[in-house]
Length: 176
Image (cartoon, rainbow, N blue to C red; front, top):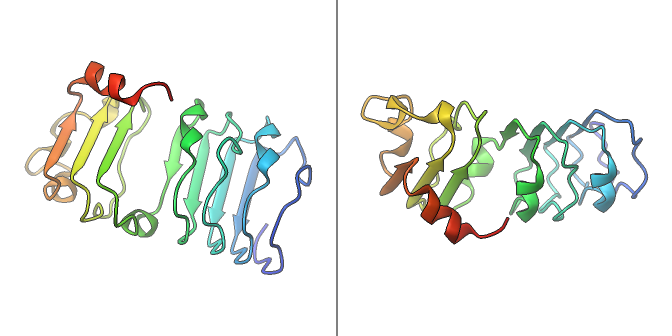
C-alpha cells in the first residue's frame, strides 16, 4: 500500500490473514498499525517507510513469525518492548536517519542475534556511551578493532564490549 495520504487507520480485521508481505509506503497520515496485526500468522515481511504520523508500534501487535522488519518512519519514538517475541526475525532494518535521531540513547545491547551480519553504516548517536554485543557470532572478531570494519563507527563510544560477561548481562536483563 503506497501513496495513500488519506489513510489514518487500518481497522482490526482489515487485512487478509494469508498475507506474507505487507508494506506501508508513503502513507503520511497513517497513525498506527492495527493492534490485532499479531494474528497475521503468515506475515513474514513488514515494511513501514515514510509513514510520518506513526510515532510508536503497540506492544504485542507484531506477528511473532516475522522474518524481515523495516522501520523507516522518521517520527518513530520507540520500538515495541515485545521485540524479543519476534523469534523468527532474521533482519531488522532501522535506517540511520532514525537511529541517529535517538539523541538520548545511552546504552545499546544487541544480544543473541546469531544471523546478524552487519550494523548500520551510519554513525551511532553521540549520546551512546555503551555498546554491548553478545552471541552475535557473525559480528565477532577483528571488525571492531583498529582498522576493522566498524572501528570508525565505534571508536567514539566509551564502552564497547563484545561477548563479555554474558551471564552477568542476562541476570540484569531479567525475563524478556
